[in-house]
Length: 225
Image (tube, rainbow, N blue to C red; front, side, top):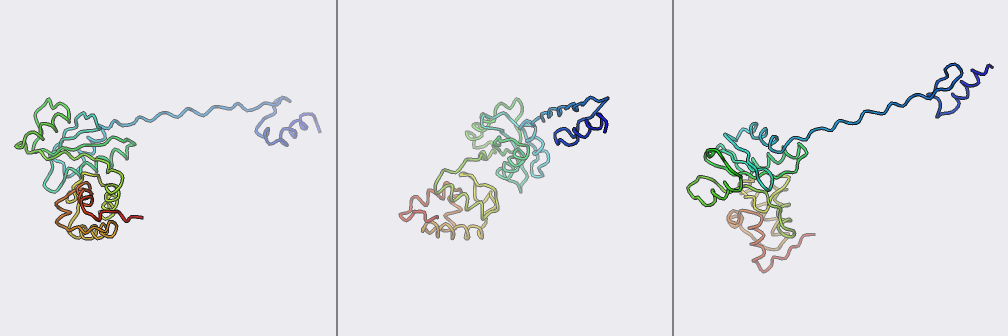
């Protein structure tokens, strides 16, 4: 066996050298080419994501996206079958799919005001101060408080098949009807030992309103596990 053959066998017998080569009797270690650095992917701006989602929403007739200190503010002109809450949650789903955590706030209006529009908060304040503006209340998600609010919100979301329910989200706008109301109130009565009627639920309107009704009843002690 020649020296070159011995050298080849020596290289082949060691696992860490099997990829090495022998050139002219000299063992050469292969050059390790570093993998290219990953190219950072650009994250879409929340405004751009919201604008695309609004353009694709069948219930939005017209819209404007405005700067907002809390996230993304949107003015929308809706058709008769859509609600601000529905649009808000659709926009949030689009933001989450884009890897963004901005919370959208939606203000339904009869028509968009003439530019310059200003900030979302300014327009929301003007709408609240003007009863003849044709603007409805801002639909903004508010996290339910720990305790009965959070429990009620979780139960209601389950009955409605929704990923979440905010403390101030309206039962009817969420898609609630009399059948859902009866089933939800039955669960609430079992959990809190407090009877509530369907009319009370529709009057309270929100998780926060229902929680206040429970707190006002003497037997409002939660029986949740």
